Length: 149
Image 1 (cartoon, one colour):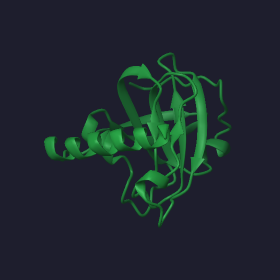
Image 2 (spheres, rainbow, N blue to C red):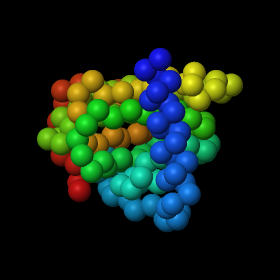
Image 3 (cartoon, rainbow, N blue to C red):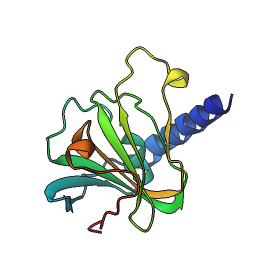
Image 4 (cartoon, one colour):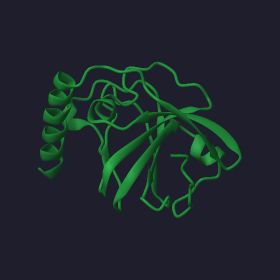
């Protein structure tokens, strides 16, 4: 029952955001992670965070998205309308990785059936990369990232 409540809240917020915020070109930063240069699109407002990487059919091998939240809190993500498999790296305000998930698209599932990926501890940032990249970079829970903000 709690999962349904989360999904309803996410849907309502996403819809309201979609109506309120105009689409803007995403800002990017170059981030070095374990010796690899990664170009990250910045999702620092409610609209960009709700949209995320949904609808994309590909993501370059050295590209991703950095979600920057106003407050450090438990963060929840899902794969609604996401067409590519992703790694989700949850990071606290000190730069420590709290969780890493690999998520695959869930075609044919209704909104209330989609898997929720949630940080186990409060997080201020989430990085999404192509699935498997976090393992190739040797990232693991507890590692520290110096974000180029």
